[in-house]
Length: 258
Length: 264
Image 1 (tube, chains in turn brown, red):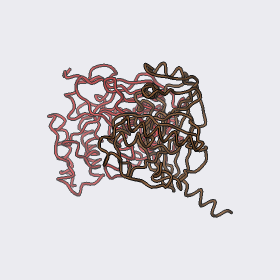
Image 2 (tube, rainbow over the protein chains, first blue to last red; image 1 turned 120 degrees about the vertical axis):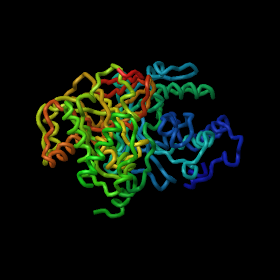
Image 3 (cartoon, chains in turn brown, yellow; image 1 turned 90 degrees about the vertical axis):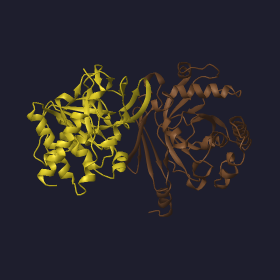
Image 4 (cartoon, each protein chain N blue to C red; image 1 turned 180 degrees about the vertical axis):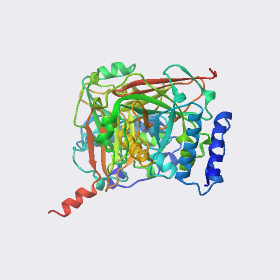
């Protein structure tokens, strides 16, 4: 939390705290959620991390995990990436669920999970590890709320019955150039599997996903550096497009009103 | 390279195809080898195969992904020829022994209804010449040892083409946004890779435009009924005997290739 507030990175806890395990990582995550809520933030949902092979290979961590989302992390569509608050932001396109019903594990299947979803949206998550160079082990990144920083949700909400999410694709472009593509199948085979995984994992710690909450199911592609001069677009097959301004050009405009 | 050196390189590649024994990269023994040399070597082999009774049924465009181009240090695609015996029907066994070091990639294939010849072909003419779109799997293969290819090695080697399987459900090009068409590649039931048409030069149509204009500069027109493979939508995956590979596309259906040990 201090690193985030002071916008500095640090070495992973596991370098010096050799027996830091996942359970302790989640205890730290929950402790910091309480601190966020105490300072007035509202819990709005959960996110999954490392649900795609592309992300697992990049990070060398092969377990997906869950973390918290608060209203302070929601970036309004059209707002630039808040570089002044971030250390080394990266962005990744995701499938986002808005829950119509409460979903509580254990024993949640993908089919049951999808039945609890009201609408599906495109999303772009801005991640920002508080660890130097995004170097961490699984307990570190869990303690760091899965590198959460901010997220944007897309313009269209569709009922899940209208989409084949395993084939819903994203094309991510930086400054107009296609840098990566993927489909929902990259996320645990289907984003509904990631949702079930989240519900079942949360249940082991006594939590559920509540109606009205949102779930970010994890990056479909590898994360892309969100440089201040970058103009980023994530186009989806049926869910529309999400655009992000890296921040520099926006401040240029403010500095030079014409 | 002089004509004799080009002919010798073409012979060595054809010999590798016959024996199944890959050769060292041509670029190692011919350090000054150019892209023109490489296409000349490719054409010598295509001419020789046509003289043996085989026919050209289309083209493939390769190196259409910016990441693959970066790996090879190039900023242009390449092309190869699709011969009649490259085409395998879906679901029927493909003998792996036909190939040296096969890999597979999902692609979007165009079937042409009108001749298309550059230069000056725009997206508009390219789209107008497309009869329909098919989902496709290309089996890429390299006659170069351990896939140690540079751009000239792969061009001389027919753009590392090996075979293809086309799906059987035609879709009109106007019915979908090819750029945003997703593809999931399954290997024996597990997701091996995913991607979208935008991975191909920004859009698969751009591959057709590039091919028509590049061949047009050589006086060659694309023919009605010909197939154009536009390039990999996902990274390629190695295949072996017993593998079942399915590419499933948004709006295009799916196509399956099955690999066996047998030689028939």
